[in-house]
Length: 380
Image (cartoon, rainbow, N blue to C red; front, side, top):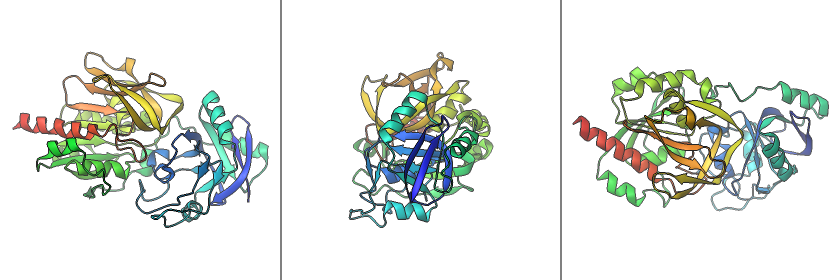
């Protein structure tokens, strides 16, 4: 079935629909990962976005039950060069197209994704629309231009859990427990509150694998209630949208600073930066992929990381007498991590749990455990 993709700058692409035959709007972005499309599609950080895969062939290994990062696809839409309906993989349960149709997610294939990616890199991420219902170019561009901007949107409320729940599922892959984790645990367990701004399931699996008993709470859960629960630590998850718009989360984090060890990633990193008095800004086209080089300023080592974000923390806005920058992106020099000089607080912009992606940064979960251990000893 014929479909069109229209960008707010007036450029229109013609392709064929797969998945749901409908019409959707969103921010058009690209991801450079070679594999892992199922994990990408189910990552809540992509809420409100139409994701373009730069790898040209998508769908050849189908969809399975194990590679889910949430209970359903979270993207607004999906753009590929070539969709492959005939899948082959021993774990596969369905084709990608059938799975997307079951969840009312529209995809478009036959698009020159190399050209589209170059446009986004030059112009920046922009609003777009994909449709089979309306094929009039002027009408589509107008709809794209009138759709919501990503800046100023609080999307954490759309993807967070509605009520607290406990989690005890451990990662069952061969990567279950890293060597450094074994030396840290020694049979000890850690009670951790996870703020769900759009948390990926593999984050929960990795934390559990490091001996953490998790209670996952909604994005707006009161800091006072967290302190009443007296956890060993607090984890701030990834999530979609503009961090500056999630004002309730910033206020709750402020109340937790200095009270409990805190570890944040992605949106959690940005919210922590705002809670500490910093500022965030929107990146031109964001960081989305599984091969981003990050320099660890504490060790001098280079980590290849998985990333998915469109906003960043301005390191110059942070109080350098209190905050130490720990990681920097080697592609564009943006901030990828910081820690508090005195308090048990640290965060990174990228995804140490990967899924998909490399495992270079898994040590950060061990660091969180070590931080909680020291705090437990200090408190007595």
